[in-house]
Image 1 (spheres, helix red, strand yellow):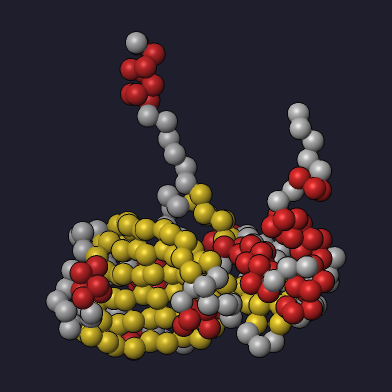
Image 2 (cartoon, one colour; image 1 turned 90 degrees about the vertical axis):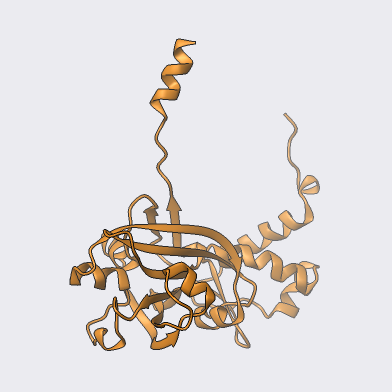
Length: 253
């Protein structure tokens, strides 16, 4: 077996190793050296340094603040969930003993655009309620959630001071409409400017995006949502069952 030596490691991997050592030895809450100084010390360009730093930010190990600096962070919990079960962030957090809170909340009534109308199965221009909010964990923004619902499902005034931030939990507690399932599309995306501002990260940093339709027992889409998650604070997995019929067919052959 070929032995790996420092000389045989790719320069970018070597850079990430050095950054990992620096981050692991820096106390949580402390600021790392300024980018120009750190790039000079490590012998790389600032562009290469920023690219390497994104890996650690995605893991939730560092946090970059525009115009302020890069800080080492520490979190003791990661929200983990199987995608086969529909649960809110708040419910998942309670299961692992993690305190989460709602940050900035904005509720408004708007006219449905073409995408929203198509996803909800309504006419373009029909009034819908848009609920957007930041979710905080350990005093840091970790998710930005947007739900869009027809006015006959949710009105702006329905969300009072007791609203925790989860539209799903609100609908489940109210009991109407009766919910059946959710269809979701998951992808990694570069953070748009507005989302990056809400999550206090850099524009272009990688986020997990869930676009979902919440379907009632009557088969109607009652909520169209898209949720942005910081990868370092969330782990999602899928349980896949073996196709027994296919296995039996192979055995018979």
